[in-house]
Length: 338
Image (tube, rainbow, N blue to C red; front, top):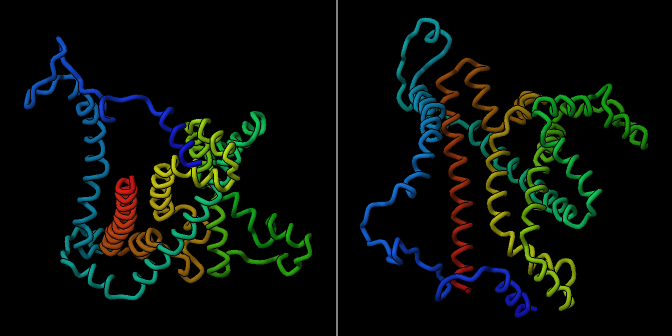
């Protein structure tokens, strides 16, 4: 089956130059451009087109980051804010944060919360995406429309709906569970404990993220040559074998990129957690973004909040760097095996 798949993949890939390399571009008269020659204006055009986006990023992201960095070295509370005082504290904010247990407790909780959500999102999203590829046109259109509507719903609106669904007195979830025989759940307070609150938040975040993964996976499956599936079926491969030998190898870049984006999106989730219970009960569902907001705005310790927000970015960068390192290492191993 491996030979048949390789032959089919080779037919699907367009021909290139000698040795598999693309044919070298030639200038006018069939001559190759000399090395060191100035780039033609057409090659500089993409870089010029990027300048507006880079300028906007520097103004709206870079400058606030610089201001936040300066603020993290200050002791800025309500008194200093009203009197326009600048009380430099050096690295005192960072020493206080890193020396306490609360930051490390919240960091571990955030990492576990992100991992659980990303695993559920990718698993369910892949299953729904593969289902879309197998459905007929009408059912695929209905399911795609439902996914688009879920994706288009604003975050706060979706959070409000979930608050109503899981309301202890008038919620639909408690009513359904009571009707099914779980009478103890008739007035259950879903935001009364840490575990149940995280359950509601996880269901909300997974529900909001599934459309992105499912629709992108379905779009990616349409790029796989049909000949590969036909060759695998003729060789007697089952559904799981077809997925592991045909679908997954072709969609490996999609899985890596999508997982990377979901890690970032879940890690920095703020409105869902804050709107459900503001990090409660007893601050047991605080993640790093909620922790930074609570200390900075809630407790009016703006310097501390700025320091926590920068440490949050550092933790996120460390996680993404580790993930990218694993990705590059895996890609290098695959190239060596070829």
